[in-house]
Image 1 (spheres, one colour):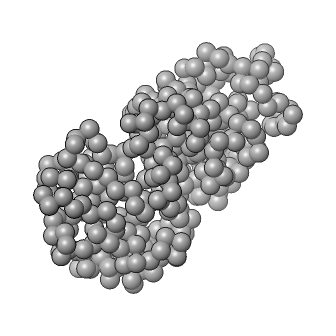
Image 2 (tube, rainbow, N blue to C red):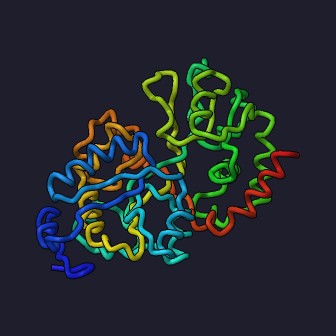
Image 3 (cartoon, rainbow, N blue to C red):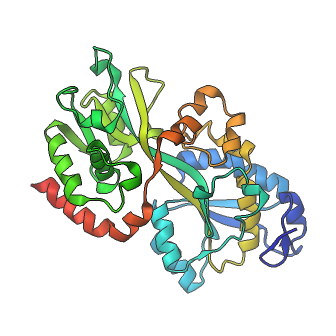
Length: 344
């Protein structure tokens, strides 16, 4: 048996919990984004975990990118939280750079056997996978042929309908380069001159630049635009007029991570093993339409639901992992250039 932390052996969560000191405070304060994440994870993880182990999860909602908060907690040794979920890769990169995330030591543990290595690091385990896709209003294409590729999205002659792009260089510049023929494997580092030249070609067909997922959804559902880039979870596919293309979708990883130095690190490791279970991950897809990291979860997800999730195998095969490290290192400079271009 492998051992982590203060000599706690890997085993079933309730067995692990039984090995902890009896006088230990059995609570974990965990940051999550709230909203549908809270609803989904409460049912799938928090409540059953407490029932099975006696370890209580106290969820706290915070900002989408809580890097400054975590750095202050760890450097000041004032742990208002013990761990966090749904940390973006860029946030995680910054936190690891500041040495504020605890190595979890679980990469070779059997609990992670169903999770691809690309979804985990020495400091993090995927909580969910999201993806940027093209969404279209089928009613705007009466001839039946729909745009499928990024090249189609950029083809103003074949598809003269109105479009919208994200008012942010991330994903937008990748789409511009893909439309110009760059292969996903050759995207990074981004050729900025080529990307902005490609954006110039599509600019006359952009009716709006969206700044939030809610705005993007409203633009499409109201008919103000006929196609746009957005996150797959934000498209209401119960609306039969809407469709998503998964060709060259750009996926990213949200993660669980333990704050470095928290006295609850061993409790957090027990929880990390628990959330890797495929059946438990399948439960949260009733509420949250991001992709479960464990491929085995699809054995327990209804086919209709599975087909709209980013980690559904056919979708994952068509996509590629957006390079968060590139954006961690270059975002400030690229964002400045992007904003200047928008004002021209």
